Length: 402
Image (tube, rainbow, N blue to C red; front, side, top):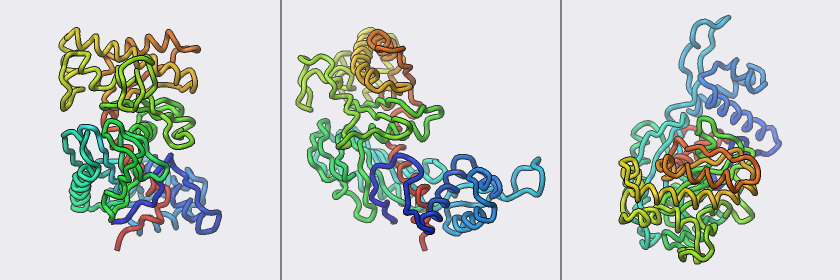
């Protein structure tokens, strides 16, 4: 397998390369890849028009990308255009694939995404990871990674890199989980426990969820606050199309914002944190239900059936979310708040009280709240697509393997 260059914190296209002739060529290769990926299928002439290079220059770049297995020709463009039809170009459905993985409190998941953005292989293991050693969890995750990579290779793909989403604070080295209270992990070098033949880039699951929304959401704004939840609650702050990470990379810990300072003790060491009122287990307890596998589905099912205790618990969770989000909205003034992860499936019962708190407490006009179409898949897809975007950023580094 080919390792992902160790840059665990991708934000988007245009990773800066040296201002040399070689650097310019690599940047232009990237521009061609991003253009065909976003707008294709396109002819060489159309690509040249989009990026402002001559047709001869683009043709040379395209030929190189075809030889590398990153672009492919689909045949003549559709009829109806003036002049001689060119050959339509598309990103390859074979070749490099991004491998994304997610460590959840109650599951592990891995998927392979091709350059077209299609999920080509996937594996999931359900079961709690809380209280289990990082070594055991990493061993099971490695098995899933190898299974997905093998399936992808049978389909004509090869692993361009691995990115792993975790529910905790991740150090700037993209390797060490500094603290994951809901897993009971601290100062854990997760990357060192995962496949040595495919060195991983590790990041917070909410960050990957926010990036997935930015990259894949049908109408994602450039400035938004993405809130995701499983057992815990995290957030990603996207400003002008880039992830806001903070000085140590720990920005977005919404779940540990105090809602009621003298409330229940939280695993983080604080009291009255948002997770104690709006996390999955907290809502299940408030609804009189036992925490267990697929608690969100159970809550949604009971709420839809009219269970008043469940609906009350979700209304109170929405109130707590609204209180916590008010500070962030007043401070950052985002275009919108996006509910993702498990929260997306509970939105019909969370939104009324959440929006009511925002409208009542926000200094300016109420911030619109939308629901992610990616749902609980956001972090996993964000991880896989971060690898895909590394390929698009520097396609010369990911040529077809011999």
